[in-house]
Image (cartoon, rainbow, N blue to C red):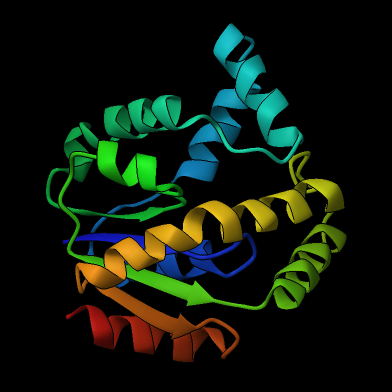
Length: 181
């Protein structure tokens, strides 16, 4: 099964992705994790990605599709996956060659996402460089502008499920699990 998780930063995609991965026995892949790892590399690509992410912008569509497609060719993803953070734009949807079974949109308000992210950064000493208030706000704006049309695309294909992401973690997991069958 191929599942995509969509939601603004702080919606709980990572939490739900890991829970689903354990339940369905398919790997979870976060594009944010991929990009943060690449940004640590002392390469031209790494510096480029770090600069874009720290400013709160999205990696260009062509580069994102190239990187994600390369990852999904790895043997561990041949029987399915749970993908978080991709596709984020209609251009990425159109360039993405994998057929998707379900898309789960985890809905949270902007206010809730900001609260969660500021709490997450306050609870450990290692606040992520790409999670400054300015970067987070910019990403939320970009989500509304660029990713909401992606939701419409998947809604038309009748594979979008919408989940209230402000419920307790266990309830969200149960709802997603019930709707992806």
